[in-house]
Image 1: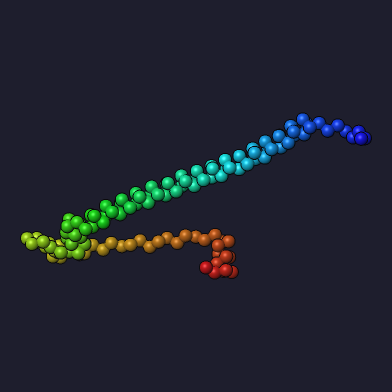
Image 2 (image 1 turned 90 degrees about the horizontal axis):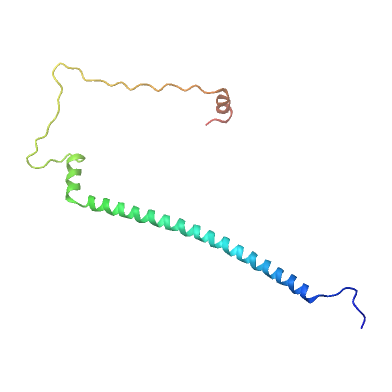
Length: 127
């Protein structure tokens, strides 16, 4: 049998194959760790959203409980609807004789000067 021009060292081939397999395992491990970090971040975002939702639900339940109470109805009836309870005496403020009503003048807004480029833009393109 003729001798090969180079020696095949099975030990060297096994070492290179082992290094190659180790590199593939490390690449796979790295990709799985990246996915784990991404999923952990999504979990924390979902937990934050769930916490906010639960807090909002508690606030709404508190508001509903207050709105259904008799005190809230009485408060609305007296303050906003203008209803009176038995025994209330309505007070209607009237002005003094000979006094002029106070007129509050609303100031006119001051026009803001436009820059040249704004004038040209309005001229060509409108608003």
